Image 1 (spheres, each protein chain N blue to C red):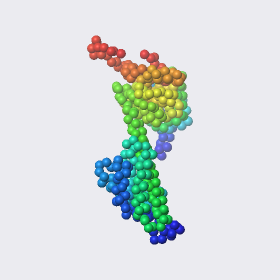
Image 2: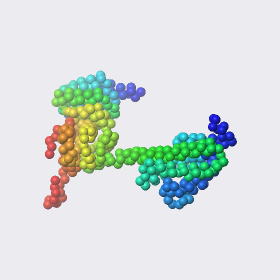
Image 3: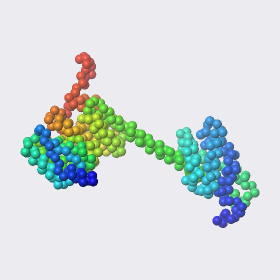
Length: 139
Length: 299
């Protein structure tokens, strides 16, 4: 039952536009074709609407594997080629620990605690938590 | 059992010993009360020691009745296990080694054996020998039970303390709105660093922290394993959208890290917790200034 439900949810991931930002909310499992479709959708949406940022909310993702890690990294790389910045928001502690244990520290990916923080980060009001944590000049 | 037949009207030696113990329980307990094992544990009154000795004798008699003189898991022993462990623990606390406690228990045997022999003056020598052997085996088993209980007590204590250490050693402190800190104390092993990582990440979520400070002032040494744990924690915090600052690296440790060739390049480091807090506050757009312009010690 629940499996069917999650499948339904990921059959097509909605890509919402909020001003200058695209908002993508991932939930449950992500399979190959959906991930492919999502990358394509995001790419087209960036080109069509000329947004400068993409926020991927993964607070609904409880289980993570190396595949999802790679998809996130690929989306970020795609977006940066199209001159948009990607922020991953709302990662759960268990997911973060799993990714680190898998050795996927996702360098080059910006992160934020919540979607709100991610939007602030993209609008440039708040300092950026950079990939690798070393990007900032040291005092 | 041929031996059994030879004994005629008597039961097996073990049962004989059981009967003897029940018959002479009071006397045995009186004698045991003067032995160091009982005397030093039950210091309040001699009666108490006698009472305790009586209970042990009863337990031994019960074990002997069931013919299980070899078996430290015999049902009779479960009744006195707690008391025996108390005695063993008291001796250990007094600074006695396991071997000395073992000797103490062994010292309980001769008085009983003398009583037993004097109790069977006209019995056939076969029976006397069988009974003494059974008694010796029984006392040996008692010794085993005492030591076993004492050891398992020690194990339980160590386990309890280990768990307490895990809980106690990882408090997450909120230093400011959006800034949390973990002062790490003691050696970091895999289990502890896992707990640190989990509690820190939970705190980041709960407190909406943008900065997490790992203070390692209390970590005596940093080797490649500890450094790896730190890097993992930093990476996990970053994935959640918080920035991690490592503070409290003492000069000697900094030297060690450099000598080991560890690359902490991706980690923001500060000399002290105060520096780390100042950095985080600055990044958050807050700043601390003295109330009086002439005040001393502005960093």
